[in-house]
Length: 426
Image (cartoon, rainbow, N blue to C red):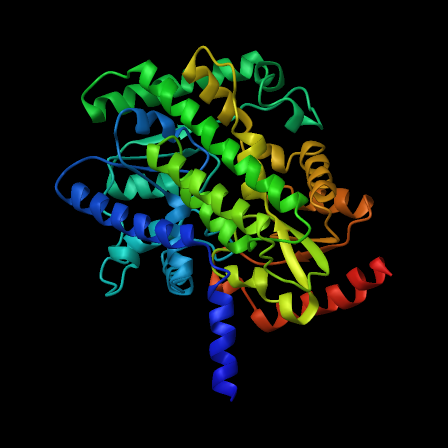
């Protein structure tokens, strides 16, 4: 009898998995296998930070891999503990974030018999922000060019930045900052042209930039469905995986088609009333980098407490942070997009104001914030608490299993739900 119950439960859980999740995994595996083969045959590819202008490489048909994506693969395969230890063994401080550097750890351990997806082949260059760790070390290890970028500081803070980004981006991002970024990106174009052996076609770049806009609009519609549906039609872990799996290829024709299919499936579930948790009681939001080592955390409390997670930074920054309409110069639109991308999620007062706005839009009862020591999460926590939204801060690393204590964090969540959230709703 118990086996029948478990079998029925497994089928019920499987029915909640999106079909696009299967197509995403299949695409990524085939794409990465092909990329490794092309790189091993001598074709150049580039490793990039998530919030750098991948569109330039896309427009010149240069393959690229996102360092955080590969770190997520390491974490999902439950190998982050080993590779975090590799970094420590090579003298890198154990307290440093591993989010963008687990790929470097894989490269430092070439004799490991089970490298994630076969390991990273040598790249022709590494592009990242100068403020990020791990990227320049990887470039130096391989003896390849490092393209280091800087984001200029804002002089004017707009707490309601999400209302300005899509059309008024020249005003919001400030012309002098966009000029600075555009000059940096011209150096990226020159580097990419040398790798590609051809000149940039700026009409092609404009097509790529416009496809990103179309892709992000599908994400915006998905966010609206999740915020406004009576109950949650899709789990947050899947949403985060799908969103970022597409973002790593943003501007490509495949990414646009995948985003469309993602939206259509979520919409169909919502229209049919197929809810993830029929006994939904509490709606939570999640603030922080993706919990790639433990995505199942987001559905751990559905049956026991009626808790669903309806919002993360990933889908929301896709909607509010990337869109740039009305651009005559595609490189300038990219310069605006990346002049502040990701920073506006944390810098006070912008980060806190956005979090409160998102909490109210998604009708949340509480928030779980990850990695309080990193970035400006402390300021976001303060803004949410001052707005009357209970917050649980979790001390953990998004990809490092050494920093995750499952029993402790689960007990913290249960206490938070039962003592703070439930009482606040009485």
